[in-house]
Length: 322
Image (tube, rainbow, N blue to C red):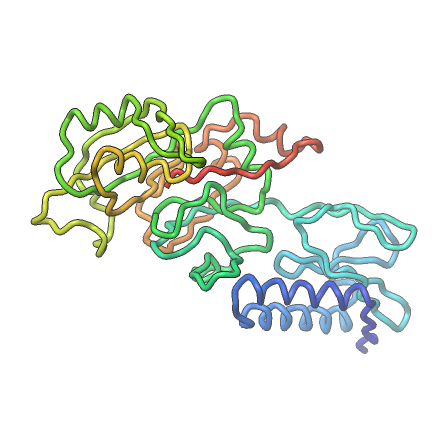
């Protein structure tokens, strides 16, 4: 016989906030309705089979996992009290009244996407723009972009639930390399390639000029894996494809560099960050990467100690070279 379900005020509030979050993030009620249905089905199952949840170190308190959430409940002789719905990526120390119990947090997840043009590198915006939530993939709550690309740029974009990746990638002792494929109008002569390699003055915030650091620049054939794109110069019109590898990231740096060299940037694709490559991922495609492989490809060796350190503070990144 099913036990009576009693929702606490906190659990009601938690559920409401979670569903409102997904409506705002996706600008759609579809996923929120799906998630709410999963919550209700899980609670109905708990009412019939209270032992289905994982035990905690608090007597009669169990946890039922639904996607990236923990439904925390307490069983009595005739009732099930839903105490809270908890995001598994939050602090694993959960307080209720005068007792505390420990839960193992859900491991962080790591993704790369091939960001298409006309999509901003975020999930929430007050502007009428195409967001990452439009991709055909259900990212876990807390997923955010690392090293954004502007709306017109394409290619490799990192998404993760681990907020410490920003510091590990951008504030490390050794600057990381990022490679971009750039299509520009007209033929680029050798002297311009050398100018881009050795450093070129670009305008920066405040109206001044900054001379870019030396970087790797090569003339390449059009990458075969790329789809055809309306922004590219027609094949019968002189144009050049460049591969530019940077270790710094001023705002719109790549576009400004080729502009100062008297070439218009027609198309800009980020191809790699260190050994983490776009590969054959199609536009809008998503690939999940295991944690150890993710940090190995990014050549970040100290990630385990940094992630486990409690005093590791996140600082916002202002990098956006594309």
